[in-house]
Image (cartoon, one colour):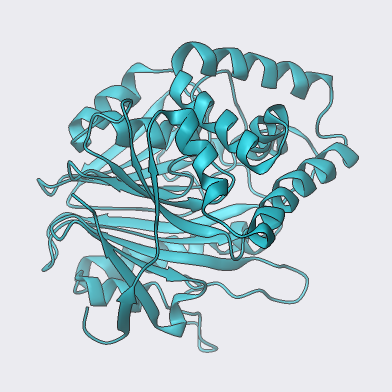
Amino acid sequence: MSGPSVTPADWLALAGAARDRGRQQADHVSPTAAAQVRAATQGRIEQARAEGLLDPAARDYLAAQHSFAAAHDPHGLAELEGIAEGFGIVAETLFAHQHLGMLRDVARGATIDRDGCSAWATGDGPDGPLVVKNRDFSGTHQGIQRLMWHTGPDIATGGVMCLGSLGSPGAYSSGMNAAGLALADTQIGARHHRVGWPRYFLMTRLLARCATVAEALDFLRAVPHAGGGALILADTTGATAAVELGADHVEIESGALSLRTNHFVSAALAAQTLSATGQIDESSAARYAYLATTLPEARRDIAGAARLMATHADPDGGGAPVCQHAREGDETHTLSSVIYSIREACVYFHPGNPCAGRWQNVRLPV
């Protein structure tokens, strides 16, 4: 990468069966970080309970989702149970935590913090296929973002490098596998949810079993979805796709360039977007419009991606808050930025706001 300096990134090696990998997260962190993980998880659940979010209907939905996971994603459920064991969190609490976004969507008046983002993929840039994402959050995950390398008997793709949060399973934000498939998600509030694959579990399973965008799309078309959010994917062939996850169906847009922020774009799902007052939702359209206008003409290499993800809105109406900073009355901020270089089998990672220019990188250990 030309421009900002790049230093080697730290990463956690998690190996073995899914439950073992989950438990190993806690083995690699300090007592202070472990306490922060517990606070980030249990604090949000306590807030949700205080706001009445975990009412009988929500508890019934969580029970149905747990049964679905046990039947269709035993490895994801085992990893979550291992994480709970390692950090000393009740497994049911951690499972509910993974569903708070959906529960918030269907509960009027809930104010649970929001997970947002800007993500895009290019298949034909000068540095080959890239998947790029800024993760924006209004909650308490600052300082617990980690790169984690997963290998185990349930991973058929040679290994998966994920960027996620300690205390959460697998690809909680984005990832790339040794076969050359990379993906990232964006949070989109949805008016309708059902029993099916939650996005965070789905991402990990795609990376564990799929080598190409085509294989991932086949899987996505064939399974039921809980609904909400979008995925951005790219692979070694230069294929990219943006997939909007509706509860009743998925909308797929393929090409050499794909992007999403925090609202549904497709005609079929646009009306299903559930927006809330806050920095993430209010800026989603501006961020999408800026990226949609800028990316086709931009130099879509690694250095260019780093510069683009550091973009701020300017007083004259130019730019956009792709790199988000907390403002008064709204604690939304960019937790991390990541660029997956599929050709290099390398991850470029920036903790915190990418405008600081302190990028790190790690090559997949394959």
